Length: 571
Image 1 (cartoon, rainbow, N blue to C red):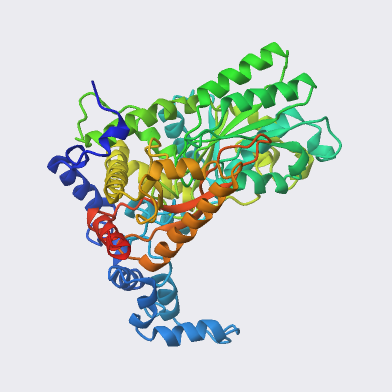
Image 2: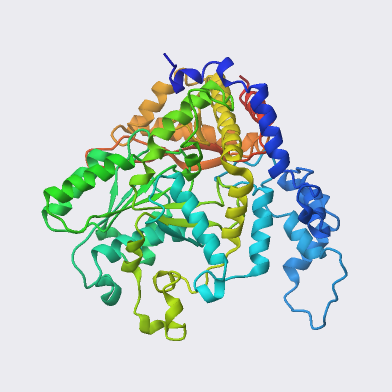
């Protein structure tokens, strides 16, 4: 019988990287992430070349300014100058000093140590594609302004629809400005379908309603509601999360029943596929079944719209067709088991009415490149505004794009072109190799942390790129699992609350002492939660995290990080 993902974390042999996989990874990295002008001539441009040359030095943040030629002087000019040049400047074929300086000293996501969050270096073909889209400068809002770019968008939408088993003839989608806007569309689709009069009267003059989302969801799940004019305190129900940080289905059913019993509408249910800090994946199929069952029971004609914020986890759809039995890429066993388990839930994305795709995250496309996918293109009709508002657009062309249904009047195509290029050049195999490399790094990191003996991994069963953990003082804590369980009772036991504070303070001090060595980890105020008290209240439990999306990161950086912790703690 195949071993479980948790037991495999403690075995070195199943966390090793096979020579075959290592060769594949090196080929993919060289072709798509090396910034090689021989492969991608665009990187030979003088400004690009100088920026790349400096960033390959992989200097720490406090070294970069002084190491850059005239760096302090250029920074001073940026800080003090407030006037626009009066004269003209002739192009001379050389790079602009200030642009090159600002670009070179922007956050260096190419640095193998950069694992702070769900952000990473874009791949070379996506950079090339994005530049092509920038040069063409189409506006995707209107067919006459977009030309063939409109067909390119439809092509990418069909590719993603096919990967998640949507009906490609019925699905639609559009590129927009980031995952926040995608989630905004998700809310708006539900509101317009359930409460169509809100389009004209606003949110204060309509039937009673509640929006459902998870306590573990992204903060945009709440900020978007404020933008939409939703009474957050009185009209939002935040559903509890399980110990694995996915949405609690029992609490969801209780809340839905409470709403439907008093004829309170639920326009949107917001789910998550891959939370930012712990990669929790909600069970879309069970939510879908629950919604349908309750709507039939309560005889509701309009069902809540299920939107999945898959901004982080969407990339796992590239494994939908992977042959796990034969494992042609030779992904190591610890990671293969984790991916296969995760895919049981990722394959349920086809039950969502819409979902968020952030190419700019684990798709390796430059900012901004986000796609809202919609299962049924007829849902876009609920968003349509009065045609009279679009009088200066030619009537016969208005229906060829989503002109009347979009939030924006301008939708740039750089993100679309970048996404298309990344999909075309990397293909399924390229993405599978890079994602597997990242996940093998994450599991190796989990395995090495456990060897320290003073680390509690947070939701290690969530086999994604995000690794959350808590460090404990080995002089005071001998059983980290028992200590963590006590911390989780902090809402009902003052003594345990004091223990939590003590442990938080110690870990935070160690985090500061370690500095940025090997890996650039982040401190997170909500890496886990306490148990709920009898009123349903809970407390945040902080900790540290690393997100292994960076294709340049390797075991060298992980080993350096672990060695530094040993040095600081003295274990």
